[in-house]
Amino acid sequence: MNDPSRAEDEGDLRPSHVCARLLAALAASDGRRRRRKRDTEPDAIGLDVKRRLLEEAVADDPPPEAFELWLIERCGQQSAPHAPASASCGAIRAMAMDVREEWRMAQRLPGFRRWLEDGAPSEDR
Image 1 (cartoon, one colour):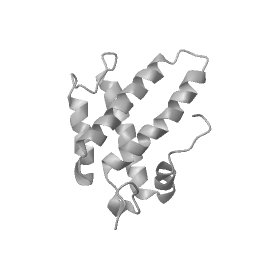
Image 2 (cartoon, helix red, strand yellow):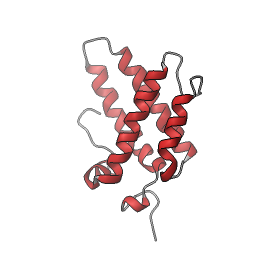
Image 3 (cartoon, one colour):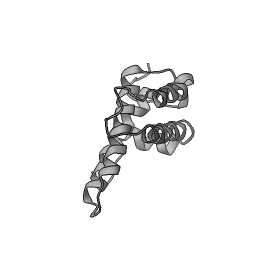
Image 4 (cartoon, rainbow, N blue to C red):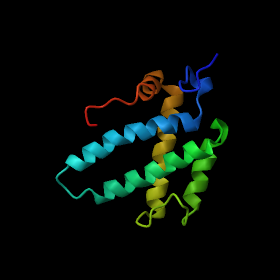
């Protein structure tokens, strides 16, 4: 019997599963951002946009074959609920592309999948 909490191979992968794991990895990025000595407000905006996209992907659970279209649709919704007031259309597009690339990496790289499955461990947390 398949354990839905673990994707054994790429055939079991769903975008919502990968995005849930990417949300955990975002904590490390936020930790690094907070330690920087420069103004990190632009970083915070990007991370917020990405977090909202990932949360929506988890909630909507789009099928794997439609995930990239799902992301494109988010880019076209300038007044979308996932977009914070401070986010531009370009920021949403950039973060959607980032999520797309991480989705593709999870599909193609077993080591990246395992890292996500293990909770995306990082010393920056």
